[in-house]
Length: 288
Image (cartoon, rainbow, N blue to C red; front, side, top):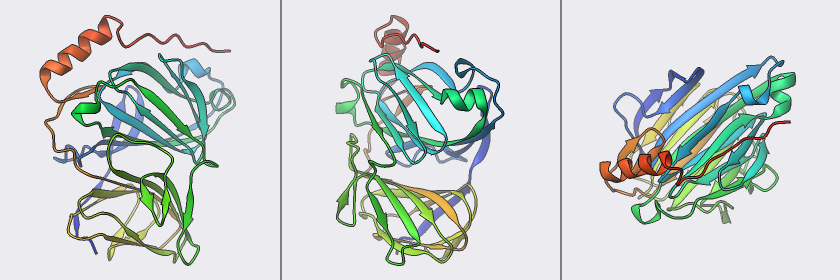
């Protein structure tokens, strides 16, 4: 069983007027290589708004993959490469930003206009230096397309997004060796999840109470593991939801500036110049 290295409660942060819970980076933990950021955003929209006035408008990225797990509602993605899709509850939006593009992320039109619950987790996965300047790509994955696994007792449901687990393989193609899963845990459900020892690994729990490797975990807590074993055990104390992210460390220099993740400050300056000169494209959103 893996030893728990640290447990941290997510911190409330204000991102441009959006109040959310930030589990990574937090309190001196800058990254859990190759994972750079974990944001948990839950809102209840009252309606009476226009889609163009909610969510996150056009902004650039380069050098990593911003990934969104949708838990409630739906996210409307648009980008400067011409990709446009809506992914609903239980689905995933996985974007490899590569050498750069501009995208927007907004709640569905009907949520803005009529109201409704909206909940997502976005996490950032670093790309190895050799992949940072590839052509951007966008991979949407619906709940129906996501391979589903269950614990032996049938009380824990696993959505396998990327990587391999229990003889199945996720449909997302990441830039490095990863395991990315979502967990729906019933009370008294129990499972052992094997994770390659060389993978850095953590669990972020959205809600509820669980026992993870013999430690009780509550709402909005991140559990970071040592790389000293393969096994992670989860027992449900109540109905809970969580994500488990694990990946082989990239072990490369890291230079970041807002939406750009590169290996040196010179590359960051190049990214800024390329964005400002239009080399990452432009996104003109069209609303009904």
